[in-house]
Image (cartoon, rainbow, N blue to C red; front, side):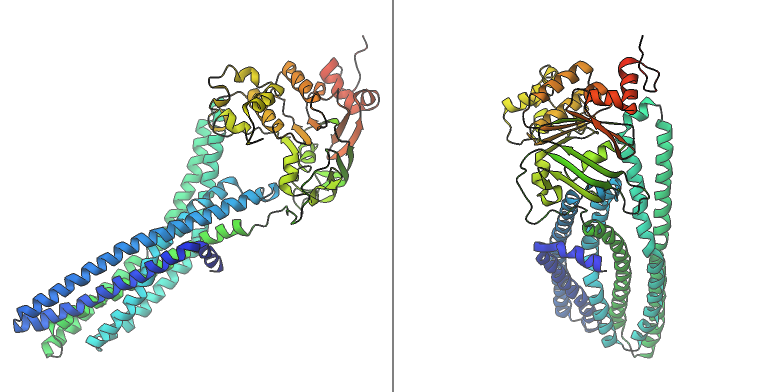
Length: 583
C-alpha cells in the first residue's frame, strides 16, 4: 500500500482534478438516491389520491435530479480522465528519467522488456484504476450508507435482510481477493516474458531469416503467449467469481424482500409504494457492494503494478555524481592503480584483477587480447560506465569518481563495440557529438572517419534518412558514422572498442592517419587485427583480466610469446606457436 501511496504522490497539479472528480461523484450519487423517495410519494400519495399536481411536480423533480446526476457524471468523466492520464504521464516521465540516471550495473538488473512493460502496461493499470475505480470508490460507500439508512427509515423490519447478506458478501470478497492478489504479479511477469521474446525476435529478425529459424521463433512465441493466456485465464477465472456470487446474494435478497414485503402488504403494515422504493434501495445497496468488490480487485492489481513501478523508482543508481564534482579535465592522461572489477559483488572471480597502467596524455595505445580477456571492461571504467570494485582509475591526474559525470563523459569519447545509430537523418545522429556543429565541422569529422566517401553518394548527404537503427547503411558505414559522431565531441581521451572491425584495411589505415593528425588527444584502440595497433606508442596485452605485457611492437615481438603468436598467425602465417617462418 505504501508503494501505491507513493505513486499517487506524483499527481502534483492533478490533485485538484481528482478532488473535483470525487466531489462530482458525491453530487451525482445524492441526486440518484433522492429519486426512489420521490417515486414512493408518486405511487403512495399521488396515484392513491389521484393528485395529478403532486404526480407532475414529483415527476419534474425526478427528471431534474436525473439531469443533474447526468451532468455530474459527465463532468466527473472529464476531471477523472485528466487526473488519471496526468498521473500516468508524470509517473512514466519519472521512470524514464530514473532509467537515464542508471549506470550499466543498474541496467544489468532489469531486462529491457520488463522496463518497457513497467512504463506501459503497469502504468495503464494505474490509469484504469483511477478512471474506472474512482467513481465506485467514492460512490459505493455513500450509496451503501445512505441506501441502508433510507431502507431502515422506510421499514426497519425489512432492513434486517442486509444484516444477513452483507457478512456473506464480505466472506466471498475476502477469499476472492486473497486468491487473486499474488496472481496479478505473476501475470505481469508473464507479460514481461512475452515482450522479451517479441523484442528479441524483431531486433534479430535478419539473423532469424538468414538461419531460417522463423518456425523456431514462432514456437518460442507460442510458448510464452500460451503461458500468458493460461496465467490470464487462471487469474481472471478467480477474479470474476465475485460477480455470480454477488448476483446470487442480490437476487436471493430481492426474493426474500418480495416475500416478506408481500406478507406485510397483505397484513396492511406496508404500502406498495414503500415496497417499490425499498426494493430500489436494496438494488442500490447490492450494486454498491458489488462496486466495492470490483474496487478491491482493481486495487489488488494496482498494488502489483505499483510495486513494480516503485522498484524502478527506488533503484539507486550505482554511480553517484559528486555534488561538487570537478568540471575541468586537465589533460588526457589515464592511469590504473591496482584496479580490480566485478560485475556483481557476489561473483566468484573478478573480471579485472590488479591492473596497473599508465597512459601519458597524447599517446596512442593499442589493446590486444583474446575473447573474454576484459578489454571492453577495462576501457568502460575510464568514462565511469562502471566503477572499479577496488583501486583507482585516474583521468587527468584525478580519480574519475571526483569528476562531474557529464563533464567526464564529455571529455572521454568512446565508440562502443556495438554500434548504435538512431532513427532520423545523418545530421541528427552526428549532432549527438556536438548539437551546435556546423556543416563544415560535420563534414570535417566525416572526412576524418572516411564517412564522406559514401555520404556524398547518398541522396540528401547529411540530411539522408538512416531509417530505424541505421538500417539504410552497411556495418562498416555505420562504424564510420559512429566514429565521426565521437570525433565531433573533440574529447581529451578517444576510445575505439574494436570500432573498425567492419572496415577494410585500406580505409582503416586512412582513419588511423587522420587520428594521428589530431594533436593532444589520447587514443586507446582495442583491436583484433595486429596491424591496427602495431604503430602505436605502446601495446597492452590482456589475458584473463590481467595485464600480461606492455611494450612497443618491436619490444613485444622480441620478447612476448603471446604477441609473437598473434603476429605470426596474422602477418606471417606461422605454425601458431610463436615461431615465424624463417624460409
